[in-house]
Image 1 (cartoon, rainbow, N blue to C red):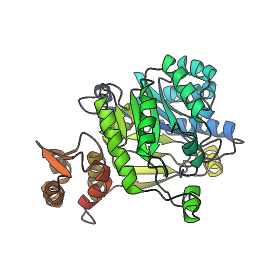
Image 2: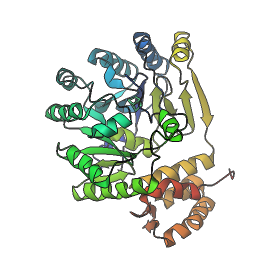
Image 3: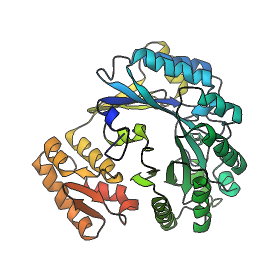
Length: 392
Ligand code: SF4
């Protein structure tokens, strides 16, 4: 996901792409999660072989591009051994042209990052850890059914920061019962480890999750949007005071530590998604692999890519650009809108934006439409009010 002027990685990503590899296994299901994963690891070995094979089958995609980022997401990629991760990294190098010093991120859960594992990872090609801490309070971790406890989270950060410079920590706010004071404490504990990047998300109640069912039954209190908004403001204030840039709605990085992988996504660069449920993007088309491990394996073993594809219309591309632009510090370039979509789209955008500009939720700087501090938390809703519908 890479970037604008303030990100050191932007230059090397000029003509580059990223590869996302989905590891669809977890130890246990977090109550809020709607990602694709299985808690049975029975098919692990076969599935990894299929990931390697999918990389081979898709080696002609991303032609003329160099791979600048490799991202292991999931699921829980830290369930894989360093040997298994290297088997996948080697398959990327074998089938694609990779830049000299790619960003290789591993999403990891604290309970997997033992001292020995961190040391082994530090001797591997993985050079960035994205650690799913979510909270330093036992009560919250239990409420979300996370597999780790607060002590494991702290120990893992202590150890990881001795071996890795480039670390991101995930935290969740808006958890029912989480006070503003506890939220501040969560942020400050993370900062006490000198972490250069944080990704912070509001707890959302996704359909068909255990969280949704517990809320419906009254077992867990519902999430409170106003509380989440207040905690987002606290987050922005603390982190900006500490020199972090809120370069995307949920992402805060010290200069030179923005996620190159995620920034590239947000800038509309192409990427390849490998593994069950992984999405790919060519610029004109989106495709997504089947979200089922058994079907994925069966299809790859028959040399058939288990994916569906959608071709984006001009309107789809405009809407996506507005949505991602407003979530980031790079905003929506009015020149780009005119060049890529035409004068009518630019006029339409400015007309729709006027009401939000008057409410100080959006502003124009030079030739760029941007979200204000006040509008940030509402950016997705504002963006959807600027969408074009059925005009292509
Ligand atoms: S570890 Fe991550 S992917 Fe797995 S269930 Fe929890 S939130 Fe979902």
